[in-house]
Image (cartoon, rainbow, N blue to C red):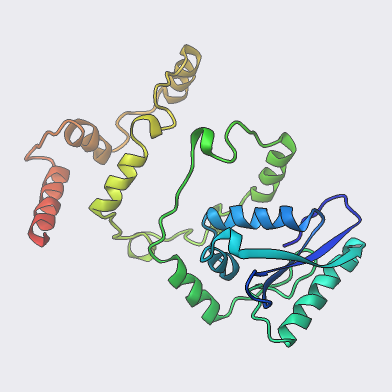
Length: 261
């Protein structure tokens, strides 16, 4: 993995088991090999799914070591050195887990069907652990205005109008048509957004914010639709009206779920 810094050179490193002389990963860094190795350990512990990190998680960190293979002056020369080392070790029979052939910047890795299938199998059933609060890596930090502006430029117009792959698709043509969340997914989503986990938990809108909302919604009829009215006045209040078509539909859906269970 390449680290772009103001350095004029760096080193090529190889990662292997202490009890084995076969290298399983080759990378480059403008820092020390030890520091880069500990960065790899943190990424592996965070659960990133690649062949190298999957392999790294199988062993105790004390059983894995990193060697300095080459020290190179010049960033372009450093990138070429990584390519040369990966090529050399693969010819020697080392089963490297690098996804690319090395070098600086994007290397044009093209996933084969076999690679995609292997990645799908590895990630199936994986639970994503999202850290929040003081334990999260980005807790208390903020993106710079330059970074925000860059993202704004890059994403401007993305997936809007005809650029959206689902533009103009309705009913059965839409990929989400007929999709319903399972009861388990609903429960997990509810737990993830309830109480202190809700980003608005304990917060109260200021008088200025309430005034802005009031002005923005002035003149807009409420509820916005019959379905919305049903949700607000029936579902949320646990009320069933026999002359409400949505109450009838919901009751029928509940009966089907109970019968299937």
